[in-house]
Length: 292
Image (cartoon, rainbow, N blue to C red):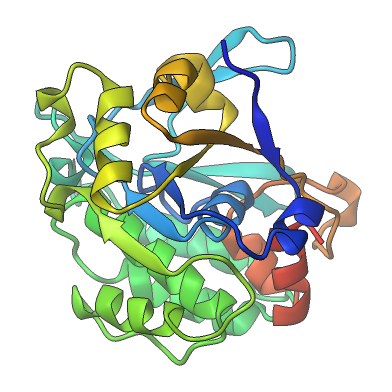
């Protein structure tokens, strides 16, 4: 296997003439902090909504072994007075379908339950009232698919990170955010694309995931692919990326401590973006996500 290149805060700051980097990630529900740290450190973020929905993933451990746990495609984790609390979305299973065709089950009262859990955890946080209100408003919309809901939570969080005014509703939100990304801001991200809307065949039409990634890098002029440990352990062929002229760069981001509620539960790293936005101001949010 080819040697890994890592991205660190020092190299990111000094490498002013960096190549074009693409990051692909499945849409997740109110994603965790490493998700935003990764997508903000690439020029292009590909929302991989065309891949198959799975409820459970195999994750790489520090010892190099695989561990099966819930997929964050339909889960997030917040902090309660008792420690981590998972919020899971009920899915209408319809066989093996891509995320953008995966339906949410609105027969269950999950909108109320998730809104109440977020309210109880963060209403008294420093910036909690505003974040709780906005997150609750997001959940009141009836979404056509899991991908639509997850994308709405991602775009909302990015708008908070970039200190934007409230995003408009619907598909226009992505255009609005992409215009903001073209202006100066503290991060590397310049553009967000949706895989299911891109001028490329779906992933099942390629021999494997690596070939699909190579096709996207070529389509959008990327010569670096930014990935995490789970991808390397599960499906990514680094040698083939290199042979295709694409440099694989593994994320090397650590969650620094920041202000959290419920000190009796200890500091919990890499929670939902809701936790960071509710507890810290924008300057500190930027520092945490940059790893500075």
